[in-house]
Length: 336
Ligand code: SF4
Ligand code: SF4
Ligand code: SF4
Image (cartoon, rainbow, N blue to C red; front, side, top):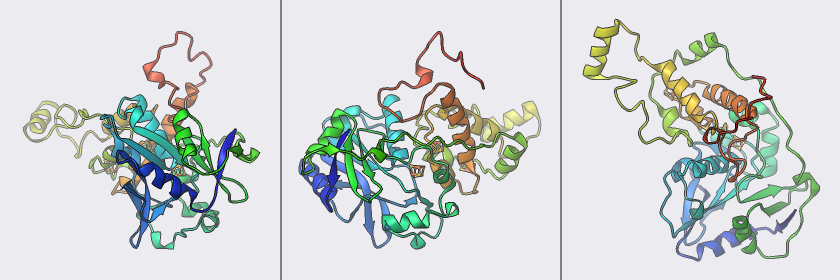
């Protein structure tokens, strides 16, 4: 596989060339005095940062319902963000024409709720910092795909610390064409198969009940999940979570209830809805004001289900989501 080794400043040069077209935008990270945050650049880059070691939200959230044609956004994001964009494209929530999705090797992230000022900015310091797995968000410590091998192209970092731009699709070639120099063979270590990491996830209902006891049903987890995209969520109306008169009518019909009611149903329906598209990013947990360890449930359930179908959310634009396909012969080897 061929790619281009990036000289210092070359990725910024390439993105600035891309931004010369007034219909082009770049969604990536900007570093300023308040830290690093998601930013949409128009015209030219300004304090661009390739990495952001602090996780607040999954940027795919900002792209849902991107339908209008004519503009093009170069996404320079973490693998879990690109994977969520790939899933949203398959769910017809992002127009394929509108994006060039570039993933970037991810060293892991800390939660935006923690002491972000302690997190080093340079990659080599960051790798040292994350040698202690406790300093990483739990979602990152069990992340199944930190490598920039998803999307249209990837920015990979080899063992010597060299940065590479590697195209995976025709759209990825657009990024490569903006970079000076000739393509060359990429180092073998960047092509090595992924280490298979299987972790134990929580399935015990007693522990589930204990963990979710604190849930106040604010639904932030739903609102910040990049792949929980329904406009007409069943939990917005009175059907599942009645309020006011509808609530009192229900109580008169079924008797006294503990409030807030419907917690289990909310989380189970959400778990079922995102089970094939969840990318394990932990944005739900990040958004929870009650500190509920949501990722271990959502990632756990979704990875087990995706494994049954030999599917991995966001791995490829071309791989159909299992629940939108029907195969007569599938699930013969399912053990779960
Ligand atoms: S979940 Fe994976 S890709 Fe996403 S921020 Fe964490 S380590 Fe990076
Ligand atoms: S359920 Fe949580 S971990 Fe899964 S995609 Fe949504 S926010 Fe990310
Ligand atoms: S964000 Fe936390 S408290 Fe709010 S509904 Fe989700 S799990 Fe419950």
